[in-house]
Length: 235
Image (tube, rainbow, N blue to C red):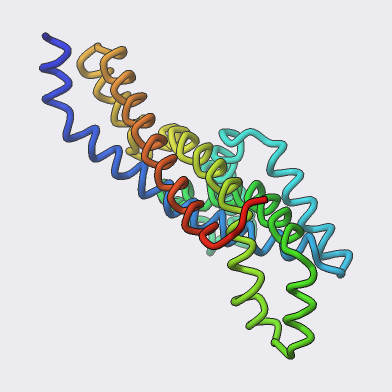
């Protein structure tokens, strides 16, 4: 009963954390899709340096743990820039740079999961039947129109399952934002657990809320896939 009373008292705080988690997840996912589309285009480019740069990005970022990149960008980049700028002269001795946890966290997650989304988009692009692209070109479609009417709708249909997986992993990775003091769900649960000395109650509640997010996400993804595949004959 004591646990239930403590949970009821701090439930609004957990809901605030849940809202922040969803906001971080949605903004990061939007950034990841932008990074992913650009990187996928670059990897398929005929320009060798561009393709090599995109290949390096996806390989390196996927090979480094998320926590390391978060700490590197939030703590390491400002320190590096401060040290560099202060060496320019006495006039820059008081230069300071502090990153906002929300901005730093969403950009970092978007950058990381953009590398995963790039592979999803690249595979989806390659799955689009070449005949449709050739027919569009033969009918005189410009590149922008071809991308908007032929490539993008087809790519999204093939990419939806992969993007759903990226979203699932990304939303769980938002818990790592607690290390840079962003007050998302995990941070709120950690504060409540410390104040009440009931870690199991609040971490279990946080786990259930994360499960709720993923359950809703599965339903939304399933509906999106049905919508994207409407009119497509299954063989």
